[in-house]
Length: 275
Length: 313
Image (cartoon, rainbow over all chains, first blue to last red; front, side):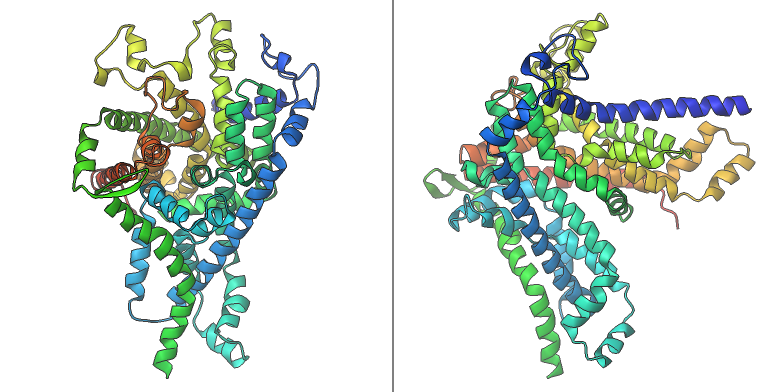
């Protein structure tokens, strides 16, 4: 019996380790290649650890291509989108959960219906609108249409509804107004939900591709993923440079992930449980 | 006075979100609907043309090809992703010591960008210099053309040319589906793990007392109690697969969608017509057809599949 159990454990560990290696190997291959010379990168049989270790690929990506600029653009876009999403969601969720007004449920239900419409359905007219506003190649196009998020409103509303109502009376007695109540009392209580929407948003903006591809023409305004995509078309066989560029493009989120992996995984897990 | 105040506050609080949503969501959706009935090209609108865009859509062989490719893609990617992730999650749930470490590794592809991942995988799949073909040849097998293979996988297995609907998805499309399973697996594993943790131990103990074997326990306890989670994962994975775009743009062709249009999916076709060729009216008609399609699939899953979902009362 005990013997059987040990065998079972060994089988399980073997399978999950093989799966984990499968998840990891493309990244290891990417990192390893990024330090190789082009000649070694395409050599057969391939090497796992570079025989000649070189930083040429990184130098090329960092100096010849506008990669620092791409990262800067993405950083600005991610930051301001996040501020917009959190602020609009906080205010709207507050209205939906703490105020009674006519049409509240109707408006909320329409928002949920609007959330069900996939982005590709309206991406072309949205592009025409942004073009009409003269926002092509500007931060406005990259930030403003995405600085509101219905899912964020929904999630914050769920959390705000759970807060006991008598807290408000206590706050009023202390001379705290309605906005003061939102930012001083409610916000600290729903911090985990705010962290969750922030995580989804940062990852979403950093990895956004289709929309920036449409609204940005100049090299100077390309966010990281679009810059990387055009770079990969221009240098389709310079593998060390391609891998170095890809690695740079994923690195900020990988670092964020290792710093906050518990929160990130928990956020995704919870987003599924609601369903 | 109090009544007015009660209106002003929610109005003021809601207005930033509502104004943005009206301008950047509601208006484009309504506008898309109007555009889909117009002849709109480079020079702007040439007026309403009724249902012509939709009629053309029904006759457009390239649209049907992208539609068929999208369905094939989902049929491969969704079940494969579900089975693999559920299997791994079930094993990880067996009280492994390094669960956190494994979960982190499996989750890593989820947070990395589709663009970077597509670039790496395109090289792995490269027929001359890719690692996959290197493995195949070292194992003594013949190399494959992967992303450059227009032939269907059923054709490749049978070894001769088949009529269109029997070809099966091209190896190129299957290669992309395989990559997206790799990328989305970690997300599904995390959701499945959360679902498995939610099943109370009493059920397993009761099954044990009743003398149920491991297979019977899985079939009669785990799967039914997990079915709401499975259902959620199935819907989310399906909706995501129907919207695949970046890998097509990055990994296939040139031109993207190739070889021979065998990897052109609906969203890529929409992008090509509505944006690249600036046939706005026709592009928005594709968008609405796509929307109806997503809606139909979701409703189908809700009505047909949800009957088999066991909700605990």
